[in-house]
Figure 1 (spheres, one colour):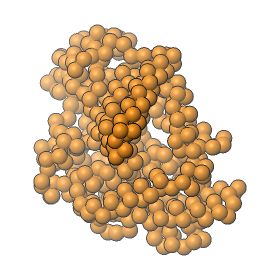
Figure 2 (cartoon, helix red, strand yellow):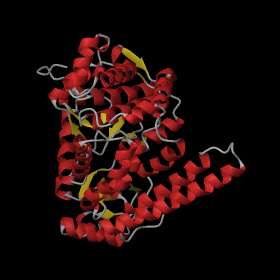
Figure 3 (tube, helix red, strand yellow):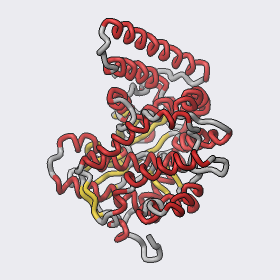
Figure 4 (spheres, one colour):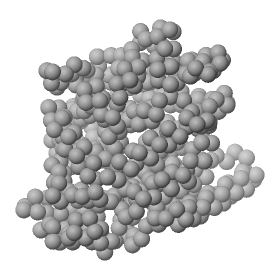
Length: 441
């Protein structure tokens, strides 16, 4: 794959790149509508494929938050057209890497030495390049290491990148009023955290220690002396990405073992630690030869405040969902309903969230849940399709809910998708077996 010697970092350069991408997308639409005049039955399949390719090609050269957004969208299997999901999912594994000279320059700047002075061996070509950084293989004192290097300028361009996508997001999600800024601020803060490898190092070590009691779950060891704000060194973990494993796995026992470890890991974080790995895409999990789950990349950690946690999980209880008074009270606590809503708006959003929560919380209602059953996911797809076409929703102000919904909901949707990919059957409350005696789940 061709390497990159330069990444556009200032606002003008990045905006120019996005404008060029927009021109290509416009040309694709013109071509599509021209063909549709001749063939009225023409579907948007080819249009989606062309647009997905052009948008992805534009984003991958920008890297950083622009490409991170594509990675996040690739997880929205029930919302995005298939062509976009398939193309954007490449941002998890396959984008052009930095050139070796640029890698050496980064080491000199942030660790004061070149890589050959720090490690016994260092592979100049990366083995994996994603949205914010790329990974190289190295060795030191007989140990195989993974060295993550952040792309230059990523942290500095986050604010300007988000400023460019704000108008599109506001229109797409019908965000109105002053309160909409809380969502953009949440995204910006989380992206900035992901560019701080000193923070990721601390979060990684803490998560490794706090989740050590969960079986069949493995973490790399991290090396502070070989890390900095833009470079992170850890053990090299042998295994295959979760997406590669599920593509060929036929062993149900292995799927259940991995699925239980994954589920326990997330439930333990949410209910015991109140902080959670909020980036559950397949590139952040691997499977070793013994079918243990390897968890990596703790740059995106969402802390869950108690005043959000309590009403959020109160609404996972069927008795609360089906009690109109309690249900409405919790919707106010979660900022889904507001004091200035008229009766029609209250009725509309109460009905909408009652239908959604009755479905999405189903895995919480049972002692065991079988993610092999496609019925649950078919129902989610049908519901997503229904509301995507609902003209009433488009008229309503989309600026609703606590800012914490953004990453908590993203986490659960990502987790559900991974569990479905594994086709795992799990015990829902198994995580409680690993809770320290001084904690209460």
